[in-house]
Length: 282
Image 1 (cartoon, rainbow, N blue to C red):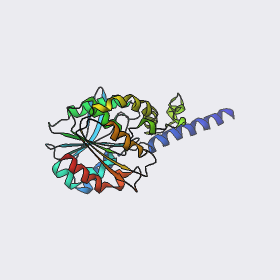
Image 2 (cartoon, one colour; image 1 turned 30 degrees about the vertical axis):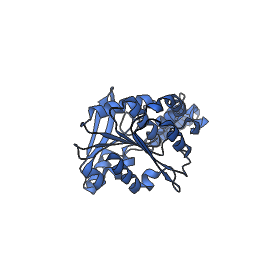
Image 3 (cartoon, rainbow, N blue to C red; image 1 turned 135 degrees about the vertical axis):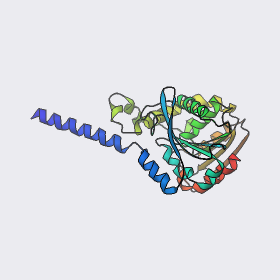
Image 4 (tube, rainbow, N blue to C red; image 1 turned 90 degrees about the vertical axis):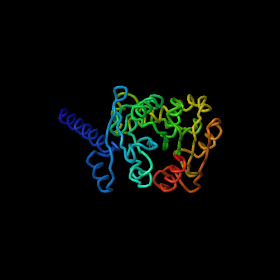
């Protein structure tokens, strides 16, 4: 009887892990990706590149010879956060558009957590391999905001413009939940489903990483555009003031404040963001 109960418990635990990990991948299968782009009649590339013995997956549309728009998603997430930008006819006519799966997410070494410096270096090496010799505009949402700043600091010659959407740069504004720490311990970390595992790790590390990055921010030199909603409860609006005070040597700095918007401006203010991308890239 005890053996039977133990067997049931183990079976239920295994079933939970399989179900949770399959439901929380937050990625689009190649079959669904093809169906999406075919329905929109948009030519695209669904490919991967090996960087530092790891797989970096990306989707590409647009003019392969043009100025590069590189989209970097938040935490958790994958390239499909930007799917409406990838199919936009105006952007595709004038730009080469790349949306990556960040390391640890989507199809880029899924569930393998990496700190922000390593991610920045890996993505810079990826873009160096994929360069067409034209300028690069980096667009980052949420966690993608500090990541593209780190990318620009690590390799300033590679990047021309930054568009930070609800970006988390202010270490004082970061309040990492205490429950995240035990979820990084063995064996609990194996119970965290799908993409939530690398997300939990990098959000736990982020506050200290932002403190470490703080002395470097004065060396940022690119054109920077910030868009942030005043009602953002996940990444407080105080980040805007912090960036304005810290980015002292950027070539230009422009801020768009959205009084009635929250954290999800990538989807709720898509038209505005596309307009800003076009003006910044020009």
